[in-house]
Image (cartoon, rainbow, N blue to C red; front, side, top):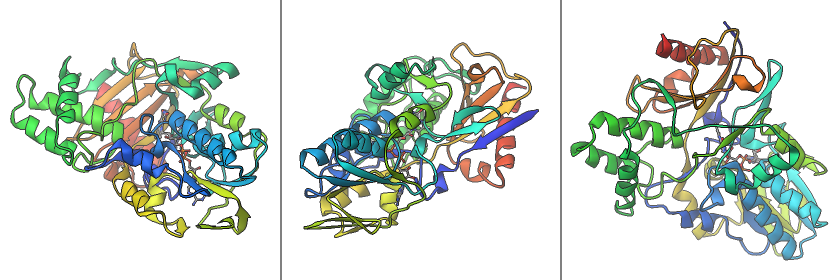
Length: 401
Ligand SMILES: Cc1cc2nc3c(=O)[nH]c(=O)nc-3n(C[C@H](O)[C@H](O)[C@H](O)COP(=O)(O)OP(=O)(O)OC[C@H]3O[C@@H](n4cnc5c(N)ncnc54)[C@H](O)[C@@H]3O)c2cc1C
């Protein structure tokens, strides 16, 4: 019996409009740098999308937020507005506040943390967004987690238990990376995969398809025909990643301590002039905007004057994919034990993929955290959250039957 569940809706959430930023065909990591470069001396965009090496990850957002905070303080600004209270916004505000700069954070949602989203469920707390400290050795948030004494659990992503489908043969990933890197600058990942499927040897077409589903679609949640071949498959999940038992909220609450944050305060205009920047009807010396690429592209936050052409061009080559998450709590542990704590289920259709973390170690209650991507999201993520949770649980039950 399922006793409790959480279901994410990142794809249609107006404050994210997707899961994390990605580079589309024709784009490069330089577009991330351009988007994050200062607009004059009063405006700067920060957030995960602006990090050329750590995009799509919470610690990348944190690093870029800190950098933007330092930038504003170094320019001598005394009153700074920060738009968004995710990792980037909190890091910027914390940096500024520490340096004695009056800082106010404007957050659209009624909670902190943005795409980290720790929520209470059935006596414990789980993340509907970020849960892993990725690139652990060089992860600034991991160092804070260690200082705070948070309990973190390693996951070996290289060793998932495949419940339906088959593991990718050794060496196929290296071949894939080589082919993607050698593709023309404006090619998409679909162009490379299609050519590869026409001459698959020494692999089988099914091996290649499963690799694309598990490694690229699961990692991006975007159509392969949109993703840049050379840059659409960026570094992220890897060896040594650890998930935080008790959720990212433990980090978020720590980082937000002492900050002035206006919750439920969506910003619709950021107007920069020679005398300052107007945000939420108040004048500041400068503004740091940390909203996701999906929100920037939707145009629901207007910049007056508009962002420079270079920034807009860079934004046009970036986008967001859709990866959704469920947390399911059960009365019984009905699935097999995986050495790595991780599971993968392929199909039913090409591009349909889900991966699961056994999070029962969090508090002893049988718990699965599932990540879903691919074309089937359109049919799976329908109806009530209870419907979605039951459908997700059914996929695991079928795969282990
Ligand atoms: C399902 C999922 C799983 C993930 N897993 C991991 C993981 O395991 N490890 C990892 O490192 N990363 C993971 N990520 C990515 C990570 O969550 C993000 O990269 C990171 O949290 C982004 O931080 P940010 O500050 O750039 O943006 P956000 O966290 O999105 O913060 C932006 C803030 O701006 C607010 N906002 C938006 N529009 C407005 C407006 N108009 N006015 C005011 N406020 C506004 C939003 O509400 C939000 O709070 C995951 C993401 C998802 C969706």
